Amino acid sequence: MVDFMLAAVIAAFLNIGLLLVTIATYVQNMRVIRSYYTSGLVLVAILLMIQNIVIVIFWFTLYMDDKALMMSADMVAHYLFAINVIQTVGLSVLVAITRR
Amino acid sequence: MQSYCRNNDFENFQKEFFISNTLCEQSVIGAIVIFPVFSFSMIIPRTIFSFLGTDGEQPQSNPRFKMVLWLIIAGTRGGPNRAKILNLIKETPMNANKISKFLNVDHKTIHHHVKILSKNDLIVKAEKDYGAEYHLSPIMKENQNVLEEIMRKIGTK
Image: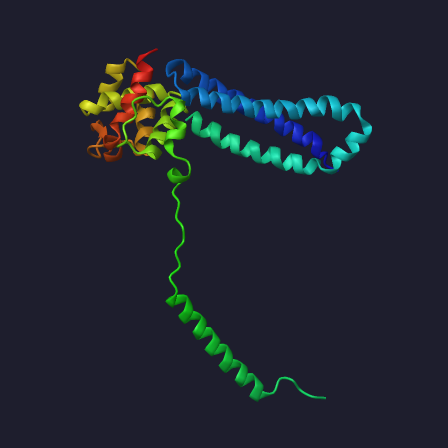
């Protein structure tokens, strides 16, 4: 059986990695062009990263500690997996067009 | 047992259906239906976003093109260099070699940037042959003030 929760967390880690690349590019540009646009890009990327960090923290603390929660979280884990994988695909496209 | 679907009935039904259908069509054609058409700028006027700091904005620039240019310049690696290339060939068309000498950037890098810029329809090559001069595309020429706005932001740092 596939552990969807673990797969979702792996996807979340991938997202964090992709977002780090994006943020690095955006910050480099922000240092040259200081404007609302560049700072907005950095802000959006950081917020997305916080979202993925929260997923990892949830998995690491609540999910691991609470057996009852683990049972109920496993029942909806495939949705979380789908959400994260779609995000990974989207971020990969973003990184591809950003680093060209 | 009584049959409900005799031929006669069916023909009647067909006739009625045809008449009602044509009537329906006529009424649709006859009626004047006015759909309210709201543009995005009517619902959310651009002045709402004026706090975002687009100082000295000229109304003649295309806002969609502006967004795309900002994204290509501010949202990609090496974007500031692309802005410099655009600013350089704005006045005098140049080939890739000349651009690399002017900006003091590696020849290969310039070639890559020029390729991306022409793929995004910001610049066009004068001729097909190697070493041809590049100049701004018509849409880029129309919206030069956007480029100037970005260059002012680069110039401050």
